[in-house]
Length: 147
Ligand SMILES: [Zn+2]
Image 1 (cartoon, protein in one colour):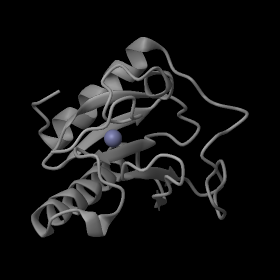
Image 2: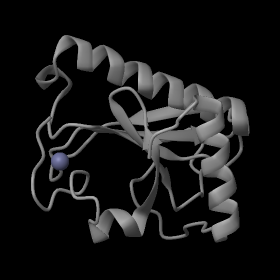
Image 3: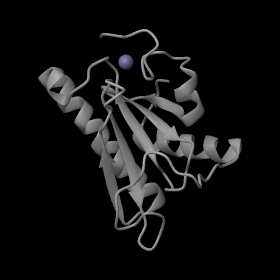
């Protein structure tokens, strides 16, 4: 597994990441994070646990496991919070560590019917207790036992 110093996802103490999301735990090949801005209830990120930029940079087994993780995380978000549709986004022009945004959309809700923005000038922040509850729900739903 490759890591890169100062990388947003490789560095466990990266201040930029800590400001934006909270680690839920390790899946098969992905690491699940809960987005702090919950304007889309249940929004998460699944980053691959390896400093690789593209799906085609992963081994076949890594790719299968990682995409299963993305799928399972999306299914858990839908089951837990009942969105209308999951949006997926993998960009990273300036952050070459593969990660998928998992963004639940709710009919009639924020940004429904359009693309989600990475940043949002009207973020919805929750209490520490509310984040802890959502993280516990995700861990239970996904059988995540590793941090
Ligand atoms: Zn990295």
